[in-house]
Length: 478
Ligand SMILES: [Zn+2]
Image (cartoon, rainbow, N blue to C red):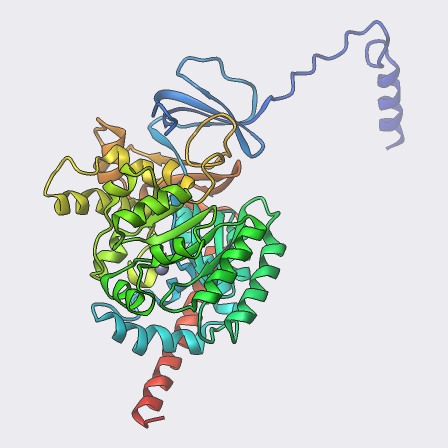
């Protein structure tokens, strides 16, 4: 041992081994100027010119895109490079409406009238089962499904929204997350007043979070008193956060609201001065020309949910008229108990087709326009249009890679046709949000999916037991 030490010491003292002023300093390689370069894929930018760059590259530093380069451009040194050959590189999809923890009710009851579905299944199951634990695991399950199918930003409203925010941040997705305020005792708050108070505390807790935009979400005008909706709008205005509400969602709802107030939901909101900045209307199926003008003037957004509306036989929003009026229209899945999935690619496909059928014209709702609704326009509807929704320098790095080297996606003639009519969520391979990889080779990087599935099965047993108890009590006439 001693000999070894002596040998090392003498070696260190040999000329050339010790540092000396004459020796040339070692050439330090220049530090990388980017954290990540994704190169070689087909970059579908969704910028204003809708550029598609074959063999292009995205340069990402921290949470942002700093450059979008054409094929052949010199690439900067990066800490990590990702070869995207054979892949489409697209902006992360934006789902503008949902009630994500309801994934735990998916398939509980289908193919029945709305009131039977609500009164015999959803309401009793919610009343007896929904608590913070249920919402947390449901939100994790939903976020996992959305991440794996290419959604990077989603907007939703439910109870115990704190838990949804926590789960969303854990999976690493971006969320516009609305605390629901409703006119009857809810699983989290006994009264609308308690909900309003709780919502304010929720806004304060999450408003500085890089991924979470907290939001105020009165359920609808037929379930919540006008005065409460007014207070909710005022709260959203005071905190500068999005205000979201179901409105003009079916002929039956329209009738109920007209009967009570002598106006449509949107007309009432306008009349009462409740179309505040960053208002998002869910559904908007029965809007009148006046409603559309009011929404355009208020710069409100619309969430269009064709699959949920078809399944509930609620009708179809006049998306062409809304967009012609200059209103940002995003696409949404709505709650997974009424869809029954969170794959926005399916919604793209359905949206393009159902509007063609309704208009009796194959030229209605072209693929390129529908894809805009699921990206830049959806982001705009959420008030995040300057942050996400396209791949441009300065925007946040929310990026999805789709491997097209499979039979059903080969050959590829037109990227928009492929994205809307052929690609499904299952083709998504890698997902980045805020510059961080949240899905790698279809696997979530930040959460344990096996654990989430086990908890979902545990909660399914609870739902079944509670429904059974509800039926027993109903039979006994309690
Ligand atoms: Zn909804």
